[in-house]
Image 1 (cartoon, rainbow, N blue to C red):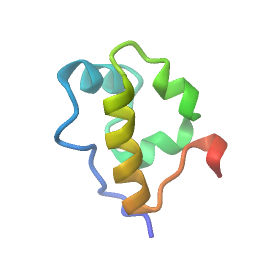
Image 2 (tube, rainbow, N blue to C red):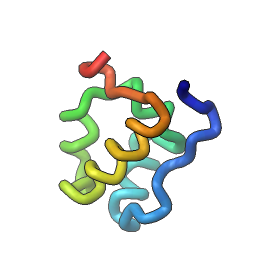
Image 3 (tube, one colour):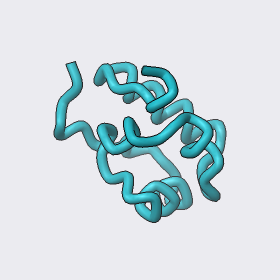
Image 4 (cartoon, rainbow, N blue to C red):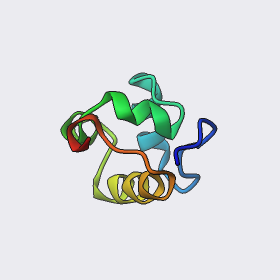
Length: 68
């Protein structure tokens, strides 16, 4: 079950954190509004950031919009 207080992974790089903040993504649940590609295409998001995000999302039962 998804937790509303699920925060973003601590180990994200600063560029990844800035990219997500610019897209108004502050919690894992915010990622449900986006497709995988929309997040991956953000400047500052790379393969390592996506792995971290997907791992934490899976633990919390959160999915991207296109994975519903």
